[in-house]
Length: 425
Image (tube, rainbow, N blue to C red):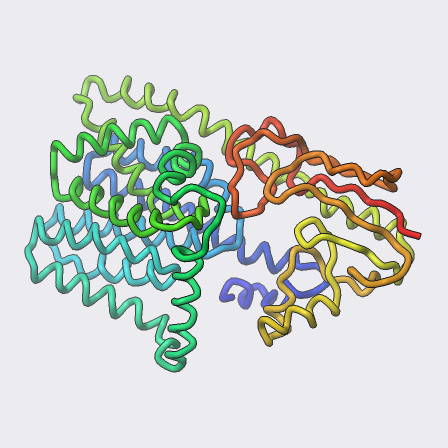
């Protein structure tokens, strides 16, 4: 909201063309990702040396999940940047014998961005107990609570609504059954290997074994944070890939710690070997950038309808595959949230030209997914227009319907669902 206010686009996301409003918010995610990479470099350098910092930062910069999410206007990358900042601050403070209150405060801000980021406090507390004792750990916890409370104090004004929101989130995460494996299974076998990159994930596993043997304060902190985070997010079936983002800096640090173990004469070859392991992730991340720069199929469908459909035409359109929404849909959404701006955040663009999902002659849209691009099932009618996005077979995020594989991008030609438009009499 701050970025959109600065650029004058605060209400634009619910207008006819939301592009500038989305771009303002997406710029925050991109900036946060850049900061997270720099802070991971600093944390690795302080904890394990310059080579480890370089390896950790490069691994994060090329992680397919982080690169994908840096394109999108969500809170996850801001949360991840605060987590990386807390790791860097704690590693720096521990090495210099200073207090860890600042690192604790950053954990509180991570939780304020998104609750699970607060688990970085486990890392800070373990490092504090190992290096400076209980008093330093208690000060870090107090600083985290204060930093969380300041931007989140609105819950003091609405305690019942806040509690209801927490219960809703907890129910979604742990009580709602989904046709997905338990989170701890899915994330360790799918989200992290493909989201972090197969090479980085393998080296991080080796780094975790090294940390369990070496047991430095940072080693123990990283292992404790990783275990606590997987325990919290892994007990339900709400398997969003992006829930693993706050773990990526920690896992990249563990990978960097293994690379940094090489003796000085062998550091160059060790970094080169690690770089080779990063090539598949680099290829996927570059492919993500390339695909997201292409026009979405929903934008293609919108242009075709603007050119070929008469004003006032009815468009029967699925939610995820539709390029437009209208005043009737916003009004219907206000049954769930009584605010016109919030009710206007739909998948397509607002239109006064067409009637969406209303009676009358016009067009019917069929779309693939979510989450995957795939051929549209035949409607048994000659299509007026078709827009193909690709074929199935990639590794997709099962819950975030971005129509973009996290791996095997060679099967996709552009973002968006495959769409077929059929003329309705």
